[in-house]
Length: 316
Image (cartoon, rainbow, N blue to C red):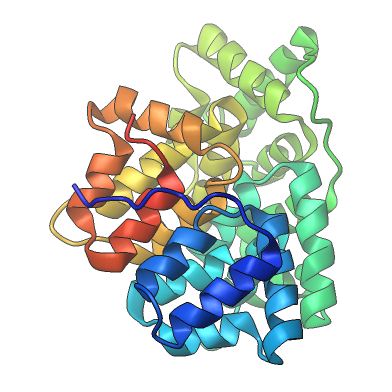
């Protein structure tokens, strides 16, 4: 197991900026010092450090980090420097690029976020890139997948836990009629229910569906849909029931087998550290009988490993 340096006592953003500059100049332990500071600062603190660094040295901190680092450590640390909504906006924008669109990643991020998270990152998206998220979805996605993504980012949804059980049963019946109880699939009904209903309501629909028809809604989605459309529906459903379990599965998938999908590993760890990482770690251990820290330790190395383990926190 890699040895983690003890988090430094919280210092002022100015002190952190000075220590980072000294590390870049070759004083101290360099990359270890950078990781030891930045991995233990929250989004607000990181923003202040960037502000103070520019004020002191007339230089953009992220550009300096990019010039000092390389490989997966650079990718992970630069992604970490953003605040959560700005980070989501950047990931989705890159995933919807004309040259190299990655609809799987765009779907993963959009369909796993809460309505309020989507609204905030949409604002960041427009402020940073000068186009609306819906515009890029319209250009890059297609078919029922496009219709679902557009509806999902536009439609306001209730975020509370209260559920109308009668309505949940009606929706379960509607989905059964739209899928398993007919020749072909009525995608419009799936889009309407999945994009208009709250997470708690969808979880209740899944429970009602299983009780009424003896199988899970997830299995029905797998049988009745395909491709990116299926991926979107499954992501929405899984995150309505247990988002931590969903992300634990993504991490397991990223590290399973001989190779490692470092893009996915970085994306999930960095985007969830300030949201629900403790729950994800608990789900990972429960599902795979191994701590997430141990899994990451076995699949990474060097300062990159040290940084990810610092984000994950104690090995439990």
